[in-house]
Image (tube, rainbow, N blue to C red):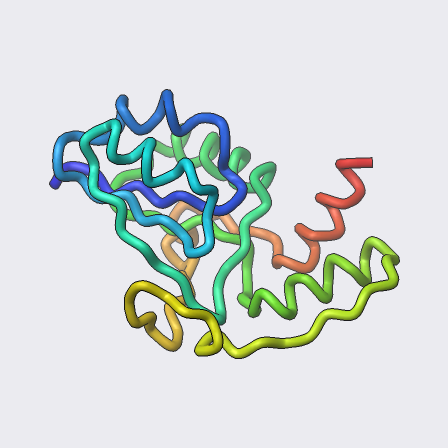
Length: 156
């Protein structure tokens, strides 16, 4: 296996270009559950294998932060596996609640335990990524709450 590609719920638009360029037959692409319905088709078209993943606690990453980190990693000639996510982690409930509060929306978010969602495979209880691998390149990502605030400012 040459590559493992991680797809996040927000990185839509480049799959049809990136997957054939990155994936070789049999390579795995980790897909979030839920995800855009087209993701597995893009992976299969590139002769890759979709692998489903999802948990209650997770990392969120603002693509603007990720783009800046990717540029810095390229300039540092980074090698190996590097996890680049906004600092700290939260559940989908906490994430939605933060967005609603920061956007000053009037909506009620109710927590739903992950085990209430029917999934095709058993999920780990905790699989949050650590961004410690960025430290050796002198890079620190902002926390996810700051990323939510900046995203909402940037989109207006």
